[in-house]
Length: 143
Image 1 (cartoon, rainbow, N blue to C red):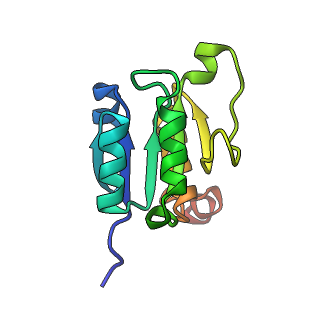
Image 2 (image 1 turned 180 degrees about the horizontal axis):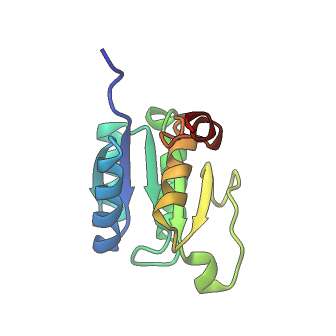
């Protein structure tokens, strides 16, 4: 019997981006849920306890995602959930953002836009899963 699929919660007010990322993640075998604002995202995270939360920063206000990230990290019931911030906040405000313990307590930060391959590699890495694609060594041994 195989292990249950890892769960991912997407929190972003960009519905088209959420739809695209949801399809990509589901195709890779993840269970995916989505919320389009911080409050709904927090409620869904508390209800589902996802393995990974991917969240945006600018959702309605420039601070919304920062606040949400801190609330998610402070919630003891979500201590096992990894947090990936995926946002254009750095580009929009001409600032570099990195996770830290006070302002942005995420595990990782990626600047939008992110291509599918980079996103999937990050998700697999954060969830401790191997890349399903054959390695160069494996390919060279086949020929």
